[in-house]
Image 1 (cartoon, rainbow, N blue to C red):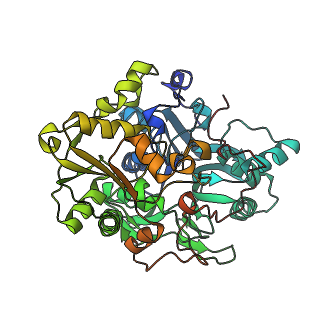
Image 2 (cartoon, rainbow, N blue to C red; image 1 turned 90 degrees about the horizontal axis):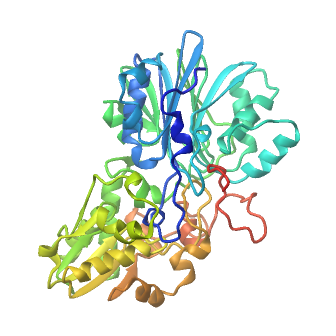
Image 3 (cartoon, helix red, strand yellow; image 1 turned 90 degrees about the vertical axis):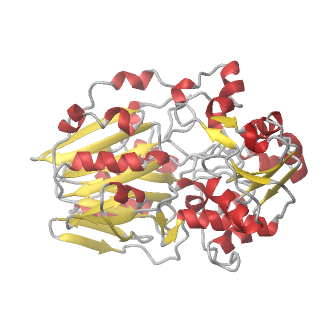
Length: 499
């Protein structure tokens, strides 16, 4: 497999600022998005387009692996897809009609090129590349076991654990090795893997992380979201089901269900925040679900005000739903600057002080002299919310009411969302009135847990058989948390270099 060339020096020059007050840390982050294509000309170019549509799922790094003529080719880069994979010279280094790709976020620590996926290994059955969306909750335990048996790890990614498990298996067929590896892991995953003859997709037994199947010119595509199919003109076929493995080859698509059947429990945050609004997730329009959440918010928390203002861009659909349900006017009272990049936010206090204003500015003509309802999708640490509310007051708002179209986030995530530790989650450490006082708004309210489920089309949450993975609100973790030991509440992730 060819090694990445060109911009590899980025691996030592870009560090994530871990300051407590960083606005970049006051949003939820999805770790990854995956994409795969089999038996289509210009597979790398198609994959680059698919990754571009999935850029919202990971903006730290991107990678593509292709196969042609008995060889695998790989390019991995730190930065945005368009910064590297829009170049003809890069795509030419990725020949072949089969490819997989990956975009990722990192957690605290240094973003390292060696952690960028897809990861590749040469096994005795041939080359094997894999890309992973999600997080394994027993990766550290497995890693210690594998190292004790002589395994040598080249990255700090939990995805490499899967590579070693496949390599260790004594099954004669690679697909059987892959299944055996998946039987050993816990947590959330959607995977795409590439061999010299097959494209493989897999989803965890609860279906926490998404994966869909598309079709282009009679050939199959795998992607984290339907928006990645739309950008290449592919037709949506169906979701990969929970616990399903799909094998795509020259013989078509084969489905396997090697795990005991379980009820699907997809991540509720795909609908609240992560998925792109134009995606369809398990048959539901993400945009319409978010509008429905806003309408439920209006039913639960009607407020006498003059204007409904979304916190862009994540709060826009919910704010529209709130405005339509309440009969209040919807206005863009905050204008987002789409041309600010992460590299523009320097790790200095003065930059942090102005960080929100660099990305958002108040539309004074809309909010001055008005009682404003701000609508956002979530509150994590609350530092950005403080600045947004103050921005409204500085622009002349007479009242600022802050409404959130999801319940309070009181528990950290261990399945592929970059949440702070529990002690740094505002709702986990403050009462509602303390949160309101900290943020500085006139009133603060959240959508209830049952309100989320009503927006999803259910009467309420079923506590005995929850329909979604919603542990961030309820503390109901659907899988074992093997790596969470005693009082250690650190994020269960090996995706970042240790500081």
